[in-house]
Length: 101
Length: 503
Image (cartoon, rainbow over all chains, first blue to last red):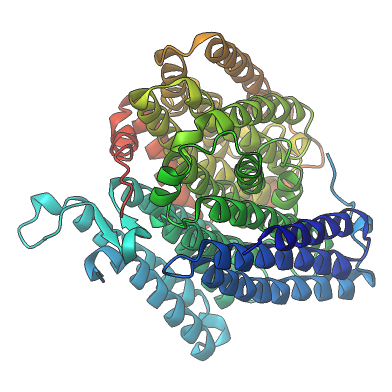
């Protein structure tokens, strides 16, 4: 099995996610970009899992855990974003500058 | 396979979680503090099996020895795990005690607070035992997830909101980077347990993708332990979060990150120390230097402690940074030096935060200038401030000196060469720089005149809450006794060097 194409896809997706985290202003879109990075991780894990073909299918199991934890984290993240939106009527991350240095 | 005795602490804490959640549901509004009591009892009960497993060989009814391997080597309870679990549970107990009065004085929900903080402690306890990538990741997320919510606890306060969002975004970003590194390491070694990775990685130290994976994992943990240059979230989060939560984050959550970093380096990447050794060297130097230099010009005392905890993270990394140059024995001594430093640091820093909570209530603010003349109207508190801050600076006979001593002994003892000497010199210079800003706070509290705006009548009426006074008493006693007789803490640091691979 050729694993390279999957890894290239994973690396591209991860890079797009990093780019999104760095340039997006809206907290929800930053969150979505992080989800892209986690999707890249899952592609990597499943591809490697099929390639390595170990007895316990660790790659696939790991990917399932990542999906579950990512869902929980989005729950927490959206709760925090809603909270901030209520207090400031804006969810832009570059306006969060009350504390620096 | 399923060893109930060894797993008892996790099961007890897990049970406590559910009971706390249920109790919060049925208790009337003015009795919510009982949820905190339930949490304290549960955490204290979890200490008991830790002791019986740890001293298993001496007990007549106990079988199986002190090191137990479960779930195919993925979960190991050995001396190292027991010591760290004890530290996490104690940190949890002290944090809950600190929180009781603080949370009570607010109108915000109480029951969930204890639920979240105990959940976070459970994650840290799991991390201490995890010996594969999946368990480590789950433990880490269980530490961080509740902590994100705790940081934003004061819902109406925009600073608390900001602290929470910054912490959350950085936390999730670091988890994604960490996972990408883990996926590469898994793919190239084909193994998920630390032991398997160690064996399979023997010939991979030149493989670019594997190096990338290791670096990504280090970066992910670098965010968790707030090492420079991945530190910028920490002071903001500590300042904005409720102060007891900041105390928990700077000790419990940070120690959990260290445990993950040290076990994965020491167990999984033992054969490729020439990859992570230099990275940790740079992280240690940057954390100490930038943490201390930035702390010099802080005006808020919580922020000052935030930068000081970044600098201390650098000190913890110092023994480990020379890993590539050490033989097996030197590596073991470096490991126990890092753990010993963590143990001492935990008590000093929790005490310092407890003083900050009590002092901010007396002086009406957490700005250092407002603390001027604290010794005039709160002499006991000012003395405690002196004890903890001089201990953090490493002045004998307070506990901090021994932590610094084992660190220097480990760096200089291993035949470390020019890089080791350079590191020791940088650490020594930093210890002096740190003394300046700790001493400045103490000088403000003892020598400066009381400002005209000081709320003296309020301070005279305000009594420090009993639970907080208890925390101050315990931590001060530990800091003083451990300063005169370090073995009461370093015994545990030495025990923790026995780290088994499992499997």
